[in-house]
Length: 487
Image: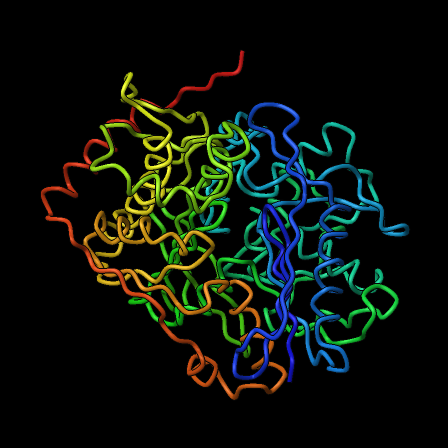
């Protein structure tokens, strides 16, 4: 049985074809443009996302001539939202990306009212521009949301195109990231929809992760196969990492950094973190605590594309290793504000400690160290909120290939970091969900037996050293707080 996993990321789309032994039989990847209309604004062209997705699907399938795809699984960047015409399927302007901060002022005003508390208690989220509702409200207020527009996150948009317009659905993990979904009642909340001026009838039907998502249209992609699972990328990664109990904590090092831990079948109190459904599978909903940092790999991408001081991300490991220490140079990666546990939409990126002796190697090292420090910020919030220590962190995502970063992460946390053999765990996890639904594996334990750990990193830094570096990081972070003010 072959399962095609479509991984719709923030900077590009990937298709992987897995067999029942979780061997990758084919793969394809294509980036798509990032659009920055104003400082703090981030957009994507939905049509570019679709064309990129279509290309990787066709390339992956073409690599396996004569072999049939038994099922399709879809995982996606969350919170990014768009709108489109129900008849033509044409998008109404660009999608607004999860990193976008244009609604920060409106969200701050909402958060100071009873609406902020309603959002927190019903959705498990904070009233923050990170999530979809305020983005759709902005579209409506600026004439980009016709009354009959279909609304959805990127999974819904691609499902609509994959099925030639037959399906307007989403899954519980994506619905729960909109600020419009009651995670206890498991339904769209009519009061929250009304508060943001959203017509609930234009939102997609919410399915379990292993629900009914239609069949790919041959005219669209060249083959017909059932779409057996949909899940937000971080939830899929948690599933692949075996996050079925609170002792398993994972961090995905992607465009952002996302730390999740399963906390069972009841929505948790979240403190400075977020409460979110981990997934709904086999008729059972499990929940997770989550902390996200908005800039992880995005910082390295900025070094490459913005500053042009590196040609590829892999150069940063050698650059960092070439130095005996960080030269007291720190980078606060608040390129889109600060997420958990600080929740400061007005924070901005900052380099501090620069002298005439500072080189490009110091900047590269500072960007890598920042990912590890932001991860520790979130882990410290986990420890404070749950009372549980963290002995092992399961890591995945593209930056796991960076040995220097993984070792520094183990050092700054004082725990073991495990990296699986297949680091594309977002695609792997949703493949597991689809495969169990399609009968490829009997249950999640059978699925997990095919997943191996590839590398282990143990802390080599004395506690006093890690605490000194982290204290210095906190000093730098504090100086970047509350920087941006609308004029």
